[in-house]
Length: 416
Image 1 (cartoon, rainbow, N blue to C red):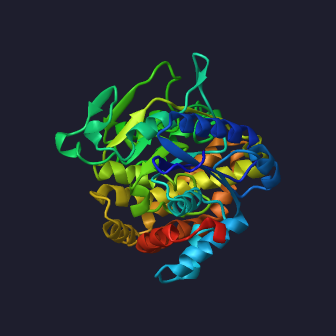
Image 2: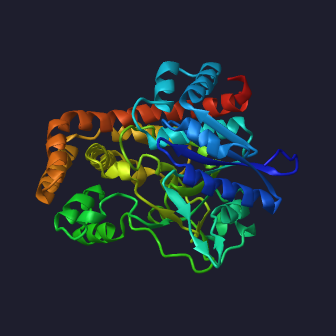
């Protein structure tokens, strides 16, 4: 994975806040596989906010092209980038890029900036709770499809199917992604047969959705794809429900628009998939799904409650995101920021009703979900305030993003 001038440099990233040596071994194998293709140089980036940094460092020892950063080094890099950029509210931006709480969007935004500093043309994200499928004795690596498609004019990309308008085919492919097999992406499998499952999951539908639309959404939500049995790929404007953020790669788009840095919520990192869809940008949907699994920590009492509260905040955040998605028609950052700000001007009453419905659904589920219902009731107003404030913060980050990307390109990681 050493630098070669004639190769595109790409960034394969794993953000983690847990022990994941086995997953790191899988992703190292993917990086080595991509390097052996001969047309790319892979920079493997591990953003490590866990308590297992030393164990991970041992697992990564001897791997060329590795950039393994703990939070202190991430913070030093961000501090240098932010303070060398021409931006307002630098302290707020640092908090949004490396917040105290868990943020799927913020950790991926850090990867975007570090990839820019490393001179990478694309970012390929994997998560710490995955491994790859095996077919015919070989690992099924998504990176093959991603490298073959990203950044190329759409008409030059070879796929097994094409559903892209002719006037879109000279645009570059900005995204390649697939889904998963294994455990549900949202940890609700244990209640799928309970009638309150529909009450809970349907709450993420847009205001005004019909019952038929809600039932279709509930049926296909969080369930993934089929096991791999040979390559299938589609060049199109990709439906956001068909791809998952732990099996995704971006070219260009991630340097124009960041992800929402919302804390303690799931789903905050899916925004660019919707931007690509609403702006009609070419993307490749493939079937090299990763295998998703749930860690033991999520099943503990503390982990269970924290996760369900993240789901709650996801539901409340969708009140604003649906407003944004319905009005998006391009990937212009100024337009997106303006729509985001406008979404916060909505009356809060519909979201208050959703908070009450969440509590009721959790209470109907009973058992350990009663604790979640109690927490939703207790934290109702702070959760509602946070969901709105997250959008305001996101608009601030969008405004600063071009300057942050430019500053990152000027920053040498070895200097921090």
